[in-house]
Image 1 (cartoon, rainbow, N blue to C red):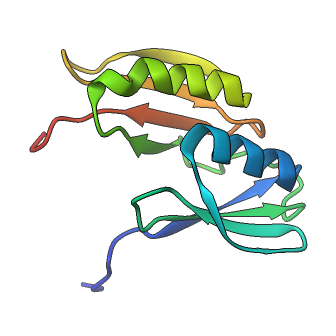
Image 2: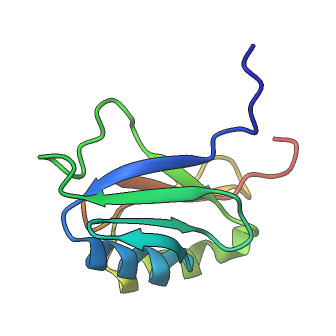
Length: 126
């Protein structure tokens, strides 16, 4: 077994780094940790995650190569409507929403590059 601290980051190819940074900052409050020409690393408030955005690294940004989606877990189920509004305001496109089971809402949406992202709430111990 490989001992790790869990999944810490993912890297996404993007078409327009500035547009992508604006979207994730508005929708999720990300902050830029490091930026250089064509590349930026951000994280979300209160988390130890890192998302790396690489401009022009792939001929097909938004293509997931077998990864169906990635997700952000909500603090409260009451935040789902605000999450939908913020995603749309930031320029994302809602694909589907509902509840997995009563009290566990979710929404799937696409970011400006077409990546499928899930925002959901899961009860503790579920």
